[in-house]
Amino acid sequence: MSEPGEYARQVERYLCQKNRGHLVRVVGPAFEMVCGWATTGVPLKIALRGIDRCCERLEARGPRRRPVRIEFCEADVLDAFDDWRRAVGVAASAGEDQAIEPEPRKPALRAHIERAIARLAHARGTGKAQSPLHGRIEQLIRELEALAPSAARVRGEARATVVATLARLDMELVEAAVAQLEDGRRSKLREEAGEELAPFGSRMPADAKARALEAAFERLAREAAGLPDLRYE
Image 1 (spheres, one colour):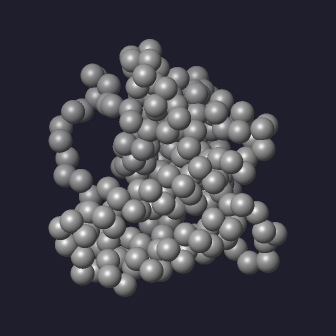
Image 2 (cartoon, one colour):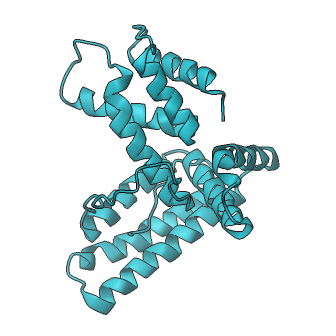
């Protein structure tokens, strides 16, 4: 994790890029807010992902007349941080707001599967050389296409079976993504996972920390290959 001042400078540089070179300084209360992200343990990559979400949402409304200020991105950054914590199994610290908020509404099961198929097709691409991961993606697309038609109608135990199947397929997908990593890349991602979790390691039991490190590494391997999360949780 970067020192808070350097963290804020990197956020400022990234925000400048997202604003097509227009410099919006991160100073005063905005600087304190961003340093607070660093102190809380928000990984820099997760903060940048939150900025991406904010900018994408604003751009979807039409051409922007004014540059995006970092204050506009705070909710998206914290949402991205919550998503990351759930993915790797890191709990909120004692000093953070513990108020229970409603979970965002999930897409319908069939819509989730169809979106996963589209993202897998994008990750597969066209004209790529065959690889074990490429072949596994092809198989997964076919398996998901077979699941999708009935997903809108399943209930009870049948629905639970579909959800369990998605979890199994996701585990196999991540295993394939990890297996195709070269040794140097694998070591780099494990190092990055450790850096992400560094602010939380001292307060985590050893077994929980080991699980979180593995989850963070797998998430990075998934992102490196551009793969979706197939689980429906």
